[in-house]
Image (tube, rainbow, N blue to C red; front, side):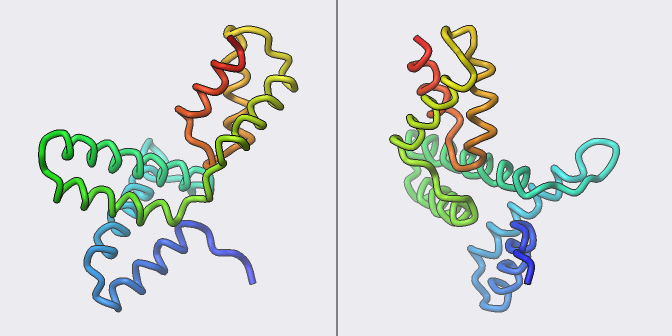
Length: 152
């Protein structure tokens, strides 16, 4: 049996949540499926998104919700912040496990050696290769910080 794509898994989980009358889960799944479909239809021609592209969209949705939760917390609206955090946590269940700090550091060290980077000027090439190797299992901001530290 072939593995389900992430979008197929989301759609299947939406059906299950609807049958179980789980309104919160249904709402979040509809939002992220909508974001994926919107991205697929962006441009002049509708395209099929790869699993990596879908995971990138999900990571972006998690980041949006975490940022919103922080804004709500700063504005004194803890209920809304809790809702946004819960939505982000739900979406994160569809993302691959994040690399630990030690694993990220080892990845950055290996990429710097493979690329032959010697200064911050080589950061673009290192980031391109590190992002390709890590995929959706690494936060870009954290990766960028580690690369900059390794090259300075």
